[in-house]
Length: 207
Image: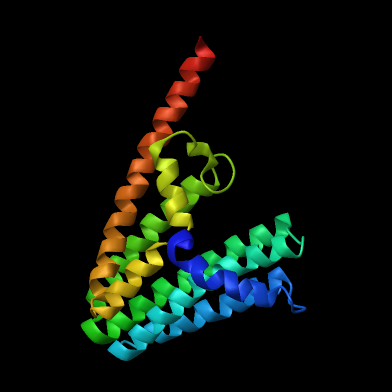
């Protein structure tokens, strides 16, 4: 989506921002506040607030491209900026999923919200550990495997548009269940691949 949709808007926005005194890190922080506002809207639990939250979430996806663009245009790329961007993305994700949980609890009842949310916490935490702790960040441990490609797709936050579609059809409870179950299936797949890589490495050392 960054290539086919987000860039259509972000390039124009980035061209304007590059002419201002804003730094890439300031742009990243502003995007964080947009994402937090989206989560608060989702938490209201009614259709129009959820739709507004979905639209604002799409804005964060477009805005997320701008800090990197401006950093390159102003020659201000930095390791700290990359880490800040990743941290803000993760914070936004927490706000979004928590907001959806509260919204579903208000509209569908606590069981429909809390159970899939707990599954999502379990699966999300498992995925986070497998991506960031085996051997560096962003899933570098899984390079040269099909899982790595999926990790990069998830890192691009294309799931934002899936959330938007579920908000449009007023079925965010379905999305929460899908995310809760799907995250655990994906985490289990990553765990299996990790074990295979470790076994192959041990056998290679043994030879």
